[in-house]
Image 1 (cartoon, rainbow, N blue to C red):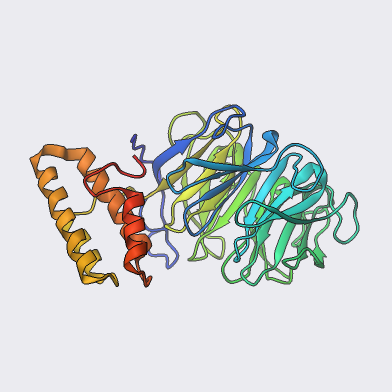
Image 2 (tube, helix red, strand yellow; image 1 turned 60 degrees about the vertical axis):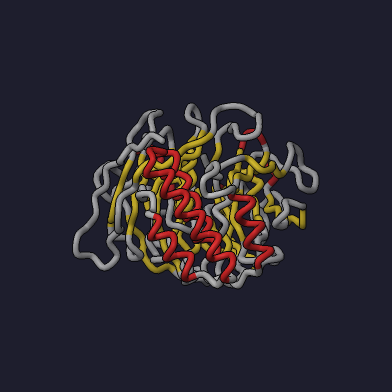
Length: 390
């Protein structure tokens, strides 16, 4: 793995300061129409399993990748029928696993279940309630609300989980609550709604009912300034991640808009960007960024962790609700891996241990029977076998 430590500036002493650094972890994708290739990927969502859902806009599909970033399936095909797509630009995941897609050129939102099967759709061209002129982004709130960035109508529309219209707010302008091409919408765990007000080079924040709270950002390239911001994400601490698209960087702000960190520059190397568009935060805090042509890829950033020691893993095993026989078996395998590592298996053994630690994390806090444990170990491979993400 290539490690490119990106430049990070953190505000010291702030209660919302971003901990750690944003190292380049991995990337995947290239231009094309085969599985795992993209034609201008835009919206990206990441679920609790670390599976990512990417709006592959000009291929008229959503691509799904597992926690190791391997392609698993594509949802949708070109067209205007049920389950078909015409330039999908945004994705969102409901708490029940429903996938919402902003089907921009069909002027509608489509919903799919967790297996990718079509459920329902709503919307038509127009300016009335529930109608759209370029729905480019969609977000799902913590209690089932669905918010849509209605680009050319310069407004945000709110719906319930089944697509029934609730309210709308916004019009063209530069005042608080007014928009100039809102390209993205995001909802944090508290239900606050954030909008990338792209043409006004700023971020606006609202409560769940659309009442204006604050705005931040001015046009420019210094810390906290923005140039055509196109993507938003919020983490569990309320920090807001912004794709500062024309500045080819990601910026991080605290819950009240205080600048915290930035990284990125123009280019095609790890940690560089070619017009970053979508941004998402995964369950472990890693940051996913989509880029359009010519990079046509997804990059993942986070704090590069050192491989765990065998003692760390045995401690983790001891804390899990496992049958004694399973616990003893796992500890024996860990000691075997340690012996192999000490004999010089170096990086390969370290990767195997790290992969096994990841599997243990997935088990934490769950009550599993021996069959489930055996199935998980079989899927991951023996500790001394291949890493599932190698």
